[in-house]
Amino acid sequence: MSNQSDAQRMVAQVRDDPAARIRLAADTYALRSVRRPFRPYRRAVVAFMRWQQARGVLNALDAEVPGSPWWRAVNEDLLRDALEAKLLVEREDLVASRATVQHWVDFFRAPSARSWYLAHNASVVAGYLAHAELAARETLAERFFMNVVLVRVLYAHALVFDANLALGRFAFVARLVGHPRARGPQTLLSMKDVLPVSYPIDDVTIEEVMDSENRMFRMVDFGVIAPRSEALYGMSARWLGEPRLLGLVHDGGPAYAWPADQRHVWRPARTPWLHRVVDFATRPRPRAQPVAA
Image (tube, rainbow, N blue to C red; front, side, top):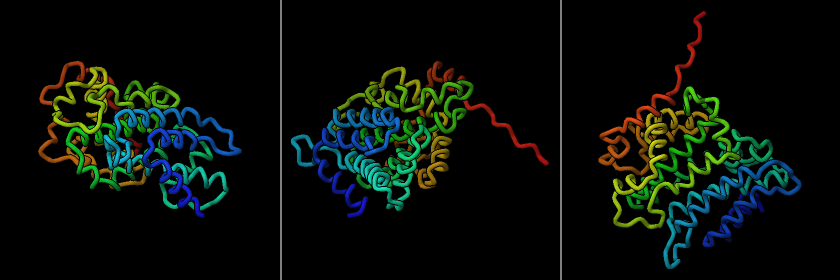
């Protein structure tokens, strides 16, 4: 059997068992006869999947409390890509089924923060694009979560790939904060700072979800990340070689499966003074222009 079909079979076996999914995801970072520092990367993936498990989005669709078809599908794509790459490396095969798998192969052969973000984010973005129809069936509040997760993933990407874009004059700490071995990415993606945590989200408005956000992370989301949303999507689109990602941001705000009449959500009518200060302090510094010949 091919690496692709083996990976599909392994993922199918745990499809309706969230705990088994997490174990399989962790095992993906244990390559036979390959001794490399994979633990920090595994920890980041497992932490986010545990948040998903706690919410219930990975539950079987026929469970007493059904999971989310969208979250399950995106997670499954990510898991399958990494698994196929692991099998390919272990078996010393050469051909990946798609570009996202090749990014994972590159990571497993030469693990680093940069190669991990390329692999992880390529699979995540591919999942978002592939399952937009499933996203559109979710509640508006759930789609708010999806967009927040994506823009935070892209920001974590920038911490390692473009420190100036991420933190401006504080660029010198960006890679330390953004490396998966640090708590920064895990904290960003745990989403514990936003409530409610259960799925599905019923009878809750976007305004109520935003009001429930931890003040510190509200400052990060609206004082640091939001002002550079367009640039974050542009940076990742270039590095991932995925121009369609640019279609998921509009007029400076996330726009994945997002109705046009709700775009004001990403632009609060009143910006607290602290958010303005943080925005100014972390604003990207002008890049030096090449000298004309």
